[in-house]
Length: 318
Figure 1 (cartoon, rainbow, N blue to C red):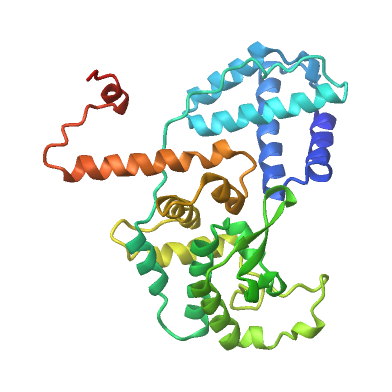
Figure 2: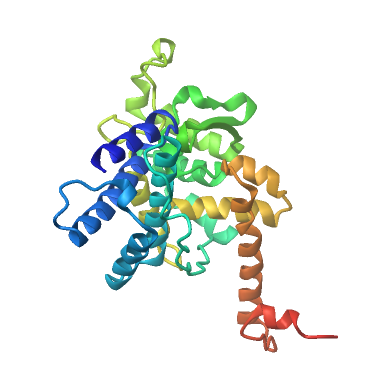
């Protein structure tokens, strides 16, 4: 099974153009399953993928559940197994996919946090000092909220990706997918103020910049490209001043989509801007907007008297 896993990792990298993080997660999940199977069959020196049965996958999930693994993690690990054995089937290395008929563990319905428009505006204003660090942080927050970019896409922005005259920015997303999205004037002004005053940026000569020597927009104190973890720390530090506490960069992505929807943007446009492959992924924001509306109503209306389930309300006959 070792060779099969290595071949699958190569396939993910070269054929699917998966990110390094995705490849690491798949490898970790498959190695864990392999270790589980070897624990069940200690006499086996090597594990033949064809020896894995549906019962083995179910036993693996039961073992994870016994270890109090989160249902979201269990679902991800099962998805990794399905993809792995599907690849082996295509390559003629396995006859059946033992994970295909295994039911995905029921997922808890999370309501991702979305900032109110007032909180989003306040967050943008927190980096108020006219120093290099504050200007960078203001530009970073404005860009996240203005474009709905993933944090990995944000740190990948180079100066040549900004098309300020057109109000556009070039983003590189999951699986090496690329897209052009709008960026607002306020965000562009914040980025320009940062580029004009950041000493490390001034040392870069755009005329000599080539594709081989990209010029990142968001830099750390040493002049290197900012990392996703650094961005998460920056967002957490400023958002901690909000009444609801700190948020992640992904909260700004949720807020971007929800606020667009609130203002009448159509789902197809939001799908394009977020870079979702499927419209069904974007449709969660319609549920999110409705749930938030109901939550506000239940909390503030003195005679809301709402049933415990919105479905129950639909069952009431006129």
